[in-house]
Amino acid sequence: MRMIVATLLAGACLTTPALATDRTGYQAIAAGDFTAAAKRIEAERRIFPDRPELMLNLAVAYARIGRAADARTLYDDVLQRPAVAMDMPDGAVVSSHDIATRGLSRLQTRIATR
Image 1: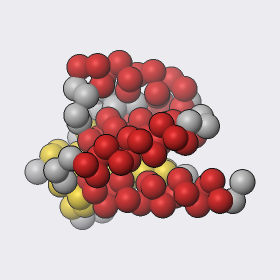
Image 2 (image 1 turned 30 degrees about the vertical axis):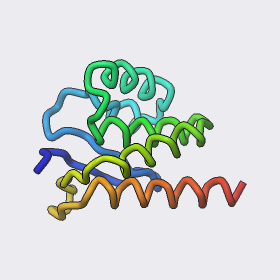
Image 3 (image 1 turned 90 degrees about the vertical axis):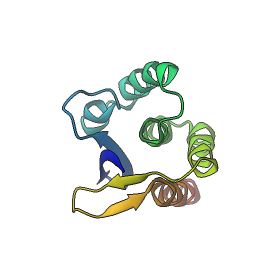
């Protein structure tokens, strides 16, 4: 099981490693700086392109800065890979596929309400 903590922030699905290092863009996303988060995560993805927590957080950042098509692509990429168990703050364990599916749903709702 991945040692990942996921949380919902302002209707967005956000994952962060249990360690304090902000390699997933968590702190920038939590601070509302989605552009900085995207840059940080893009850099980390050059090293670890297949980590679902990076793809999920980058999708959140992209959705918030108006890159809905890129966010959708990332969620779809997560769904094309094997599911990874992610620890949630409430102690639940949730599949990366479930998180991506929820993210796609939120993205579609956000687009529909514009």
